[in-house]
Length: 403
Image (cartoon, rainbow, N blue to C red; front, side, top):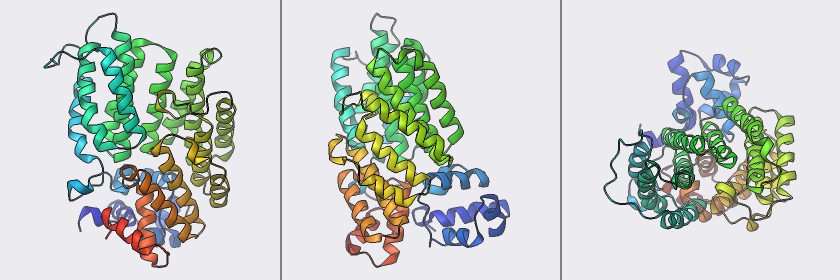
């Protein structure tokens, strides 16, 4: 069977068989019924929470990607969702991770002023989830920054800060496309940059991305611990610096997501509340270190937390209070509609779920089509045959190679 057509349920069954377990044994280990597991494996029950996928992966002794099937490839460049940019990005990140002096940059790098302008343009592509376009410009930015950071000039700290921002974009695009090993390479270089400069805001930004890598791999305890450790580290600097204060709030959102996936509602809601408190005193369009930390994003995180906690009614209730048009990030908007779709689907409101999925795909297709959660929902909607926009769902399923 072609890899693209192996469902998540079939992947779980395959991993279970390798363990030599029957459905009863696996169901007992994850605290579920045999009926639940049977429905998951035969595709009648989609896995709509990363917390559940992560639990299954841990018990089965496999990586999350083994169960999700990421990264997803496409047959033509027209349908490509950004994967064509990965080889060049991988090479640039590998070079950026080499010790100083090992790599010879073939040409004189542009000035830091020019590179900073290019980083800002690339950051807009990252917020728009235009991974193909981002991949065309990011490798050269990384390569030129290597030459400057390898130099012991007075501009090295400024160049390291730009390197952190560039590696952040590489980390996000790699994780969202499913190339999680590449995400690790990117965040490791971020941590080096933060350590070299030593500024609290850079330390917080690198830690925020470290949490992101672990959340994508469903390594929930390390993600939670990294967020809490970073909060302890930057707490003395929060009072007088809005940048650090924004990172303080963003790290609380990371902790909230981690705790929600650990099914700890009390802690998740506590961190959400602290993030809300901080967001109220910061700019409404805040986007420090590309975190989009602002009031709207805290409400998007509240929707996600309810989804991960398995509280579908709360997902819809909270989604209704998100002022989604007021956040200048296609990626965040698409994430909101994806979580909302999951909530509707969990509530068995498939027409509303289809509307939300299709809206997310219009906003940021390269992001949406690479999400395991979306693929599960689209596959289920495809098979239901009852949604009022069935033709559009079938077309999306075809583009995602689910037909």
